[in-house]
Amino acid sequence: MLKPEQNQALMEVGPGTLMGDLLRRYWTPFAPTGELDQNPIKPIRLMGEDLVLYKDKSGSYGLVDRHCPHRRADISYGWVEDCGIRCNYHGWKFDESGACIHQPFEEVAHPDARFKDRITIKAYPVKACAGLLWAYMGPLPAPELPVWEPFTWGNGFVQVVLSEIPCNWFQCQENSIDPVHFEWLHDNWSQRLRGVTNGKAPPTHLRVAFDEFDYGFTYKRIREGQSEQDELWTVGRTCLWPNCLFTGNHFEWRIPIDDDNTLSVGWFFDRVPEEMEPFRQERIPYWYGPIKDERTGRWLDSHVMNQDFVAWVGQGTIADRTQEHLGESDRGVILMRRRLLEEAEKVRDGQEPKATIRDAEAARFVQLPIIGRDFFLAGYSMRDVANGNGGFRYPKAFVFQAGQPQEITDAYRDAMGMHPDGTPDLDRIAARA
Ligand code: FES
Ligand SMILES: [Fe+2]
Image (cartoon, rainbow, N blue to C red; front, side):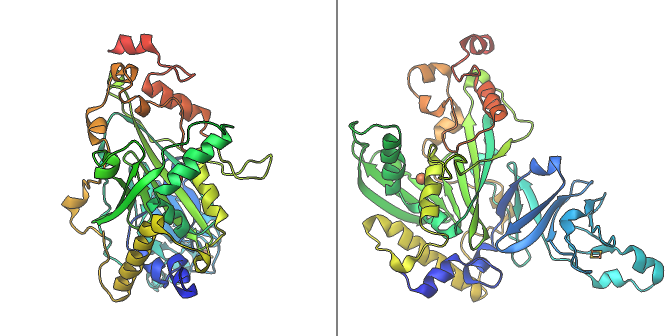
């Protein structure tokens, strides 16, 4: 149970708040790169700040204040040019560094005054990596953007899936260090949703353990039928610092939009069978997943992450941690809360927090604990699938979120060597083998 001020410290994300200032020390994925190819300007709300993301005609990304420093017009209604974005009200123009680079009438009226040199717009650096755009909203110089190991893997179908969740980011992140929920929220509930009431109960959790490492925490579990030799115990899953879950081939970031809303950003990798290699994506596809059943007004519950969303929003817009009763299964949650608050205090004291990387070489390839790493590195064949080895890595459908657009399902099945209905296209695979 927390005191009200501790609850507040953990959830607030605006500038100048304890956790807001900690989160601003990291690169934050907040949009798919592909989105700006259709429309080069997008209004963005991130950590309680209203901003505008743009890609100018030379290909530079900018993330600037939503409001023009002249008389506060909404810059998302402006347009991009070869360099920078121009406000539609009086034509002032800004580049990605926040410099004002053109003031049409001022430059006519007072050509020598250089008024524009005294004007800046708030601007944050943006980088593109792994099909995502990442913002850095903290004090400069920015740390390096970590290239997590799976971003370097080849021969995989990658997709980015986003959803806006109407609750605070931190209860979402607490789910990243909560092994026992899997048995109930996913295994048992899914059985009930399928109408199974007399089936064999999913294996129950016997032990859990939590460890901290350089880039977050690992959680480990032993369920009925598993032993200490299982990688779920020897390697574990990763609660990635400061606001992500990493399971080996997918990431789920919980990005604060503001105190009351979270952008769930998922990055998913499916290795294609070796018969379908080499496989390369021209661009990484993305989609926004629905979270509500429009017919009933209830939350969707059919897919793994939708089930998580049901739990998060069910805790209230901001979970009231003064009313909870933590048990043994929550030791990881307790550990993460304590460590985040400690690191946030370090930032407040002017120190560098955990898991910021300043060495460019080190950031180019950052390893994480990965169950079954060999599978992702070495791949598998359709014979392995037929033998039941690796078959679970050859799913015919996307299980994580509801609403995958048909063209992405089709592209995935094509990459995996499947017919449009998800069955293996053995003739095509044989022809390529
Ligand atoms: S308000 Fe933007 S140029 Fe005047
Ligand atoms: Fe979950």
